Length: 464
Image (tube, rainbow, N blue to C red; front, side, top):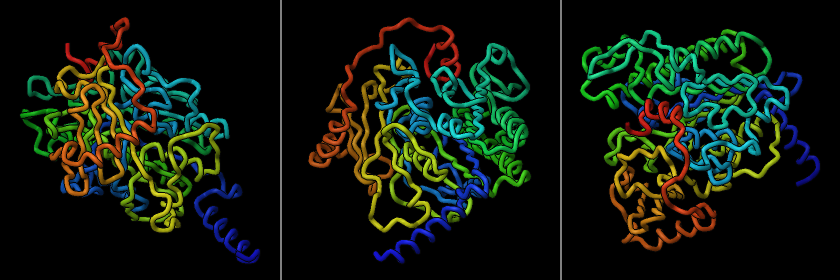
């Protein structure tokens, strides 16, 4: 390349760079990160769902980039959020279980998005809706304001709302360890009103997680649920997503009304999905597609609109993407790779695509692994996929390991582990090379924290 050509290429790149809000004279951009707890991609309109559950989320997808093949590192809320906030796989950030003798808190040594933004002058705030995303797991690192509602006052307070008890909707809007999306949104909007400074704001919604708190009656009636529900966990799922989507609309309206939308990146991503009866499991924490295939949408000011990307991405890729877009750097080695070139559509076909995605479920080490799990799932589970072939390795009982061809078996119904030993062993070698399986299996030994037990029991993580 000649020097004149190189200069021209650089100027073209700089022009696009400034159009995305990077030029200092135009002001530093803000970042809005919205995480959707327990939200399946296939229950959102922009991912092909037939019901009208997600008009505001769909609008963000239409004005940005939607990743069709995004993977989470875990089916457990704090573990997946730690990966989102650090760009690290669980075996590197250290938060691998809900609760046990170790591995249930993000270490201070990990560098989070909030810490980097705060150190570089951004205002940082987080408003989360439930105990599993709270400071109890170390997720508050770097936030000037971190509000999880997990105070003693909230634990004993009840407000008007609705919840199902014995098939009847009763008034309640705050449960023992969670709050509804409207309460969290109110707090986030108040925080936005406090300053016009560039911000990094994380808003976490928990509504689809369980039927303990349900939307107002008007949302239930949209889905003909103003009568006794036959199965609250499944039936309320779509109304909860719709109500959550409505609250996202409130935040978008406020930012747009404050003339900040043009300089704000918006990311919508789920921590994991939900079983809803697939593979005979209604909750999460396993490694099937309905639980680790997640919605992942990025809207960048000045960036492409209405673009859908089929190539595989991971939740750990968000961390370097936001840092590259804002021109910031991280200090430590990470597992994620920036998606900015893919978002800008400047990546040549076939180059730098993600090779593997990884997820885990350390069920025998987690005190709150639900005892209703099938016996073969009570194991250390390690998953790796190249986007086509997917291995779920059962470390304690390798004969139970599962291999699926996602391109022809999207529901993961035909286990090919025995009939395709070459593909099975190829992916198993990837897991071994990652060093993720250097763990001893067995029941955790620790003192039971009764307060944590009470909170997690209220969320359905354990029984009794």
